[in-house]
Length: 210
Image (cartoon, rainbow, N blue to C red; front, side, top):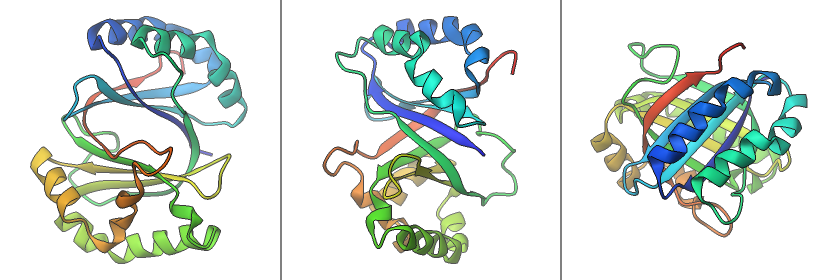
């Protein structure tokens, strides 16, 4: 099972937070993560989007309670710990044969956490996946290199969708004129859900010792 933890929050002092994160990496292997990926917003340099990859359900609860996670948020200067999305991958499409097997250096991510699955429950997610598969050619032509869908473990009506774009310009055009298969982006920022995140990859870190 491929699981991911993701959080979208602001860090008043990015350099201080980044140093704290790097310093805590040696403490992570025993908690289960194998990768930490960090993106920084193109519109707001203080906003970051962080994903942590794990392979088993068990370590997730341990990781969420870990002092390491708390120290990352403390170093960010947040007053309240932000919501953390925990989900399993249900779709992973590589649309650009020139892209490598991992996150592309310099790539732009468009991330949305939204209640897409509420559209007829599980059938809504199946419908979304079918729609994306039917639009693969159009997505690739619009600059989408990779397309991931994660379903929340604690709420079957919630998904996280990550779209990797080659350039900032393509991401801007995609957001202004999305394909019908990407209608879910309009759900981001509604209610308790964070606004659409558009950012550039800072680093994809393999956790040492895993």
